[in-house]
Length: 153
Image (tube, rainbow, N blue to C red):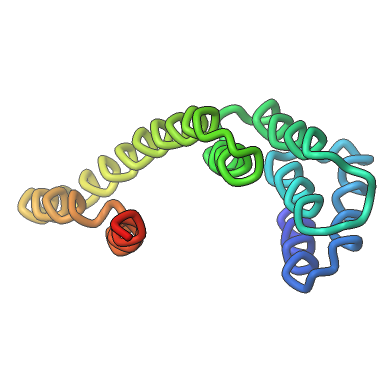
């Protein structure tokens, strides 16, 4: 699966949308389904002009990604941006972004707990320092600062 996804991403990067689309169609014909395949297919339809597809078809692909894995943070973010940027529906986009954020918080917390427990094996002081440090390094603050600047203009 990783090889297929890698090849599809490479075709998209090279703007070889038809080749990427064919790879996805072949995978689907073999009942190979994943949220990422659906998302990449939707992205190809958005970026290219081949085929007779409507926004409704693209929306269905994002929803299919979530049917395959309702916990896919990637799918939640992608459908959020689709509703925000393409469908101009901030309210619906917000719903998906909030769900993705909730799942990220849970996963990030579990990661931090696991790392802290590993550090505790070396020393409690190391674990405590890590916990203090991670609080300020969990988000990419430079991106948030750039966004704040954009809002101020």
